[in-house]
Figure 1 (tube, rainbow, N blue to C red):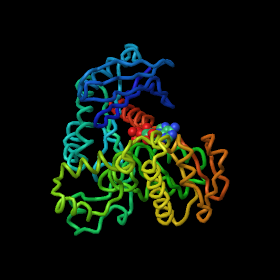
Figure 2 (figure 1 turned 60 degrees about the vertical axis):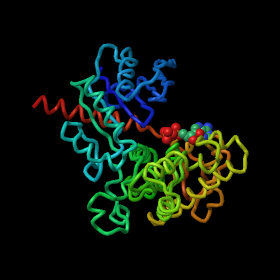
Figure 3 (figure 1 turned 30 degrees about the horizontal axis):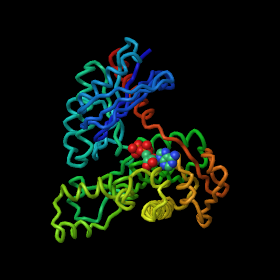
Length: 391
Ligand code: ADP
């Protein structure tokens, strides 16, 4: 049976999964490498109900991909890999769907590095490593921005002189693979209730998306993955005047500001403790409580804003590590929201039930599956390639 690999490369991690292709792709194994570029690199693999860990020492992305290929060799069982699906953060204004990664496409994606300097180079490094290891496999890029490319102009632009829009300074939106999965899940679970949906993707990175009949019409993330909600270490919405102040009064350069906004802010900056919601929920310090309070406040504020964009609300979906697992955060977000039609079912929320509401608006918990979205795109590209070869 044909095997398909998915690779999701972050700045210091690579998540991966092996799927069998078929009408419904089945995940055979999954895992991740954490702490690339440090001496504590570790590869963990889940396969046949067992978890194994391999120490890697100091590895870069290319070495990481090679280690993954070694680790999944038994899963492939001599079958080889027919297609590899890659998560690529930025598809610019060009890609509104997955694309087969030819040399020409790779050259286009290189041009988007300035739009996502902290992520795009790592994504492309993983693609190159995979191309080298599997020159015959179909390589497919799945873009976090693609799902949002249909945004109406007002949600795609900033109020800057027009030339900046033309130059690509736009509200791209991210987490598109997760929203794509949720839109598909909603179409299966509740096609009637999916007209006006707000999805809260709350993980280490966090954003929200307004879906109208399964299409993204607005997102809290904009030009970069910094905007909107506060995140583990990212600031979320920030008055641009703060940046001017940091430059002019504190003498900070672009690198220092980038480090501050991407790595030191959000839950970590506010709590002075941790970027990890579990740690903050258990901490009980005033600063940790305030970090949670700010996180919840911003989600509630955006919920109202996105409901206004949709002209009302039928469904709210919680997903991502926090959205799927923290009854506490979901409860705080949904409290005193009867005015918008949300009534929380506290017992259902405590049990992480699929539906946690009893009011007019249905509130759901749906575990996201970005890997499945990538695998599905890779299989579809593989079928197209085989059909073209057969003609
Ligand atoms: P990423 O954006 O890196 O994929 P995840 O979606 O895995 O991140 O989410 C990570 C976040 O989810 C962390 O803040 C973690 O603390 C939080 N989280 C995971 N499990 C729980 C839980 N049981 N309760 C509260 N928060 C949780």
